[in-house]
Image 1 (cartoon, rainbow, N blue to C red):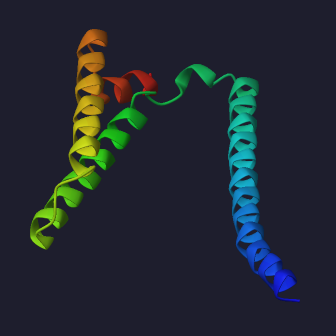
Image 2 (cartoon, helix red, strand yellow):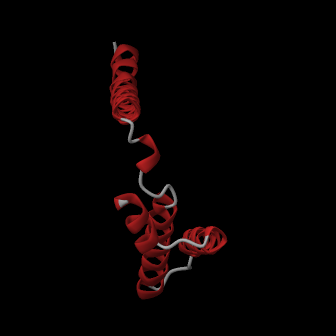
Length: 120
């Protein structure tokens, strides 16, 4: 009987992981479906060309990575530990921000210009 108990004890974490993966996958499918529906509605309304700046997510990801990286580095320093992955995350965030600003200069538009163009 102990073998059966160990087997069942091993199934509980596996079942939990599978449920989490299924919920995550389901959430991703719903988000993609809703985004598709939004784009189809914009196309039908004839406003698909007026979609917001696609670089905004790069700016958001860059800022988030910098914040996470700097937070990790500060936490490691204050705890007296070794600085680890925080530096990598911060540098990845800085790279995303540099990419955002380079692309912004290449197109020659700013957020204000984009808003002015959308309203006309």
